[in-house]
Image (cartoon, rainbow, N blue to C red):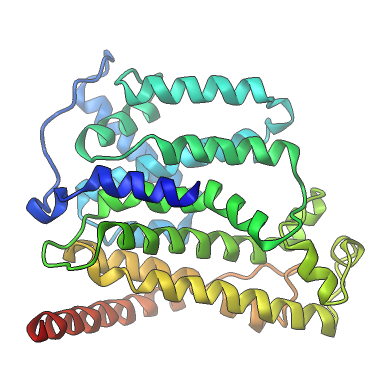
Length: 336
């Protein structure tokens, strides 16, 4: 199912960015009485929401071109609103029927019929970039799963969940980031790298928030791997940091880093203007795993975070890394 979603999005993108890496500037036909000033205000509000709730992610978006930055903000806000249906302050009132209504609203949005200012910003984005609806629908499916499921038997189950709630964001973002015209990689492989980044980010979220999730009765960790490590659900709910837990966490962190490594391979294939912000976001998020280690794997009562100074110090590092990957691509093309 995930493979089909990747291929479908890759086909939609096709050769679009190889022929034209600049975003289209034509104005969409949005059936709303809002003026263009109100649309600008809608994007600004999306940026404010992003800055408030996703500080590390927001810092990465500030390195993007204005058009791409606004588009990513609009996508982020839709994703956050979707997530809040099951994790927000009013989530206790969310039912499968409510999610069905949200999906019908999504269909209207893709047809140019936004309901509010946030929808209008995303509708404008959809008119400028070839984004497919399927990842959005799949994210809603992930919310349906959250209503019914609080544990995951294996990593295969957890991977599917990670795709629903975060891998989909990677697929939504590729059309905005753009593909380098000189890239020789297949479109599908670039989408796969973006999918890997979404998976890596979600695995990182899960490892950072083990204690918070446990307090809500949820365990987003593979049950069979917990058993193999000699751990039980009670160990999670009682928030015990033991040698067994540390050993288990080392394996989970290693897996997340493997997905980050896979995602990093796709950065050189992106449009040159998008490499630095994507690289910076990847580097900043990967540092959360370092912070979990620095907390002696206590992700029950200590929240792993990256300090502001370290974040800003990482920006020139990520910029240099994009130059290095670009140089490798040039050498590779020369040899070809």
